[in-house]
Image 1: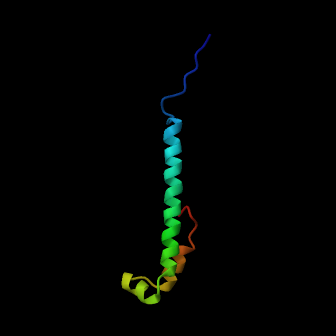
Image 2: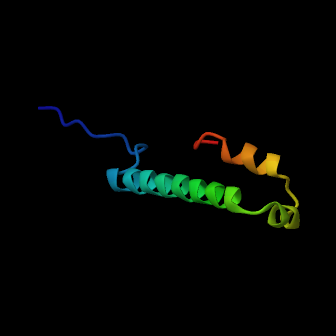
Image 3: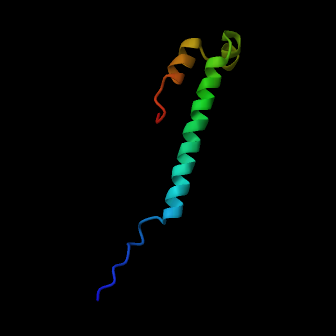
Length: 65
């Protein structure tokens, strides 16, 4: 009888799940920040040094960027 062992290079399932959940949390936070950026007035955007065009360009980026 042969015993098959998983290679040690593969991360344990719990670690993969934590990484997936952290990635999802990151995407949600990024989306929230982009929504917040769009809600700023032109005056507030000027205060932080970006234009309305820059804010819209950033907000339209796909989630993975």
